[in-house]
Length: 551
Image 1: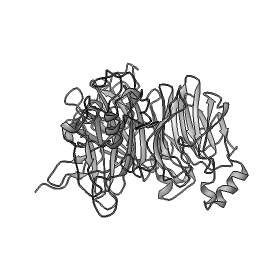
Image 2: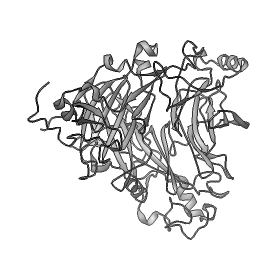
Image 3: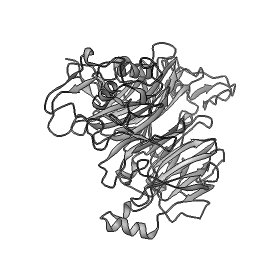
Image 4: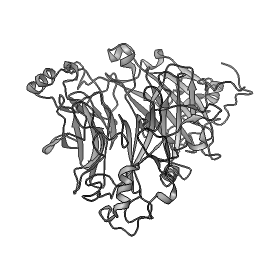
């Protein structure tokens, strides 16, 4: 019997002693001028050489091209607090003072010079349009209902596309009405039905991407199609048409006519099919060797063998699943089974009006009743979406430190032909993993390059495991850094730690790090900036140190 796969050990362990010198952002404007509000970072975003940091009661901007010496400072700040009356009302409804603030949960680009922001507002969410550089508010306050959660602990995603805001969140005080919602554009606004478990059941939204004719929502939810003791959480991808105009007064009025969903599978194929069930993070669509791909991080469920994995999904394969068989439950307690093809309307529903196989209809309003009635009751696909190669690209089991966030560089190395993923964990660790297939097989193998102890409790001023959880990762390839956000600080981490190998050629070559190379002229391991023209030696594929002296 084959041994249970535990994954690789890192080539290089980087201790906190080394990373304690990395620059930290704490929400200060200048040295000696402190912020009265402790940071509680919700998300970050990079745009036009500006790093945006959305936190509790504040949004900050950081100029990434400034050379900071001891600490990273902001140059623009928007303070956005709820009124004292709102805070008091929030507390009177039984909430703790800690959550009765304005947690900025939506920070996205709306247009060239406009950002769209939303905050929880002490359980009274609201949104604004603000100017990109100054953060100055424009226009009137916009209701945050359906666009931003009331409770800061609830998950949410949001993205502008085609003149609409697409959001996924809980839309009520009790977090009982979760929805996927399109709004703030030409009518109609569309949503998933209220509290219908066959559409969504206790979802936790992870990411949304705009791709082709569709918006894709990635989330966890409780599976209604599986009967087990307790609740089984599964990972999903759902798809809606961007040109969906809803149904008719008879069926799906002001609701999605194109909403379909499928399970995301990330597993170790075996007799037991060991699953990484819980989706944690998803990238935007990236292109690798002509394939449009998203990477996703998963963890095992709470009562399973502890472990984490990264799986990659080809967007074409996702769409193939959405063209497959539907799944249904005929009666309340019956098993879920595939819908026979002869019981699926013709032309087949689930796609966009004006595109095959529904090209004869200009709008979803024109769909016949049998198509609309079918889509009101059938959303789940029978087949799940398998990862590329039907195996995790990277995995580690039997370790309690689980990965959640992910950022990917798809053009690493001197030939720009390697993929490097940076994985953020619950314990303040950053894992750096590289694809070793290069120009060969597509995402076939990976190597675990580094485990980096990033969190600095002294600089970040908070201790404990909760403070160590990585909230967000933002890759800035031009400056060769990764911005790693925790709740109470943000740390600027170089993509490579070539200085650790110093003048030891063997250590430099065997590190297999695509960002580092042995430069003969200086006789040291050096960070390789794109196009700097230095002559260097590397062995990314094999890390062969034969014939080189030990150091």
